[in-house]
Amino acid sequence: MDSIDQLMAQYPQFDYRFMEMPDGLDGLTINGKIMINKELSDKEKLQWLYEEIGHALTSSGDITDYWAGNNYQQENRARNWGMKHCISKAKLKEIERQHVDEDYEIADDLGIQIEYLHHVGLMYGYHFKSIN
Image (cartoon, rainbow, N blue to C red; front, side):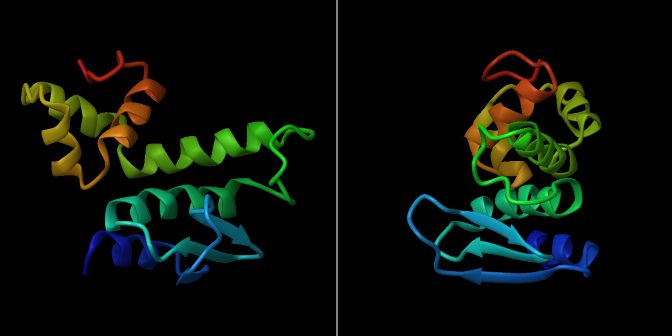
């Protein structure tokens, strides 16, 4: 079972669909249905799946307009939920103890994109392009 299947098995209450989506839209959650762009790489699908599960669990209503009401806060909350569940701070601490310095190697070992690793690191307060 790959990482995507394992993640979906942890949250069986949602209906998952991998489908064609409009340009610029990689994930969407509506009424318990989580849709992910099927054209993405597996690494990107996993990252978006975490975020969309975060939306399903933490967001309410239509938040497609980020600048209306508290939509931006809901977007950030879901994104942070996804990143924290994808890569825990404990996992980053473990990597620090192993003295792995190459961010590309770290991202590859974690099965994520390098840019996503940098966003996770920033969320946890690490310096850009470094987890130590």
